[in-house]
Structure formats: C-alpha cells, structure tokens
Length: 170
Image (cartoon, rainbow, N blue to C red; front, side):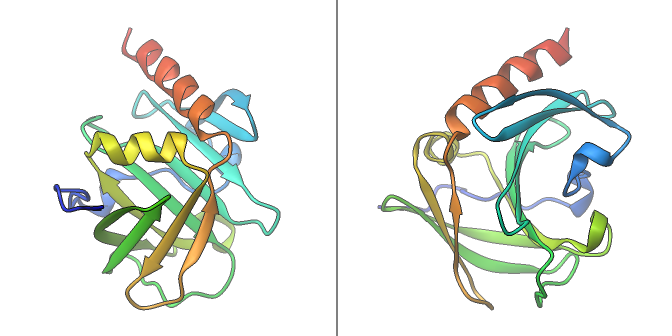
C-alpha cells in the first residue's frame, strides 16, 4: 500500500535543532528511559523527543517540530556518507509492507561528534502509528544504499514522549 498522502512535509533545516547524542547538550534534560529509548526534554522548544543508539553507534531520533504540527524521524551515523547539509533526496520507507514516499533532508557539520545523516518530516498519523507498532523500518534513499532501523520499544517510548510533551504545555 503506497501512501501518497502528503507523507513528508517540506520544512527548513532550522525546524530541527536536536543533535545526535543529545544527552551531552545543554538545552536537553533527561526525562526517562523505556525499552532502550531515552526520552529528552528540549528546554528551548518545550517539547520532547526520543533517541536510541544501536550497537554500531548509529542514532535514531523522533520528535516534533517546534510548532508541534509535524513529526520527524532522523537517522545519524559516524560512518562516511555522501549526504550534504540541507540537501534533499527522494526516499522510500517501508514498514511491514506500508510504503511511504517523500524527501529526506541531510544534516552534516552541526551534529556533535562527527555524526551525519538525515531526517524526514511527516504529518501522516498512519506513519507515526507504524513507527510505534512495527518492528523494522526499511529506508531506501535515492542516492545511496538502503538500510534497516530496529523499531523495538518505540510504542512505549512514543507514549512516554506524548506524556512528556503534554507536561511541557502546562
């Protein structure tokens, strides 16, 4: 099932200021941990995000844009990539047969400890539900090799981030 519904919204790179390994960055406070995911409060934006690092040091982050209207998922690595900051490229994402087509925006240089990678934005509730309930996200960028992201524990992490976000509004 190909979901063509405005899956990934375009936005400026400034919409995201979270960086890989945010535990060391000043505006982020640890909120909690659940099933291998760290939940952090971005004190500048008054919103929360989740982050997980795999055994190879790759980092996955999920959260909301500053206006809370759109969700994002970012994948970052210390491995050499050809991704350039601000560049966009087509990407296809598959989660248990549900396909999403859109754009990934590259980040390089402003990410701590030499991380590079990219993020996608989505306002599609089904995309967020799939991130929470599926086990693997297969990512197929237009200009490089595909890769898989283990989504174990995302359901509970997203739920805890929702609680954290509602507390930041009060």
